[in-house]
Image (cartoon, rainbow, N blue to C red; front, top):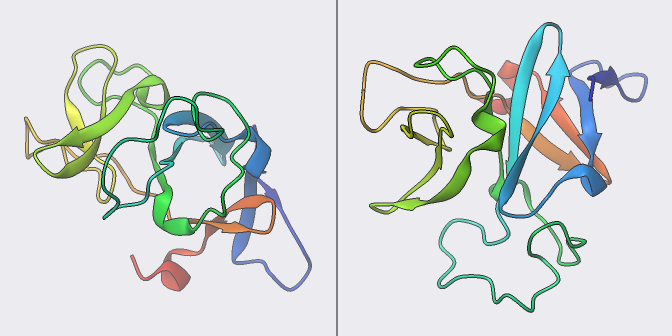
Length: 148
């Protein structure tokens, strides 16, 4: 998927993909100005208790019927700094010691979704991209607008 500008007068926002492209509790990858961005949607936003039941329509590729807030949406660089491969969007998301993380599918390092910090190697960090849902669009926000 490639990022495109959305409406006139909203130059600070770039459309990366649609809501329908997202897969709950998994990642997808979008392209923006030479960067691969791994976008993750968590079916249960931070602070929720317990796993999503398997019969839920919010699991593994089924339509995400519940209202989604940007609280469950995260975006990180897709390039794994340890292997050099663009694979972070294929990683497994989960909770490790109370931190929401994605595990790289190659060497299994864990990166925090909130800030991209590697838990095993604190000197390594993935770039975080400010994203939000606007209607049916996942948009990339201007850095200043996101406060990051």
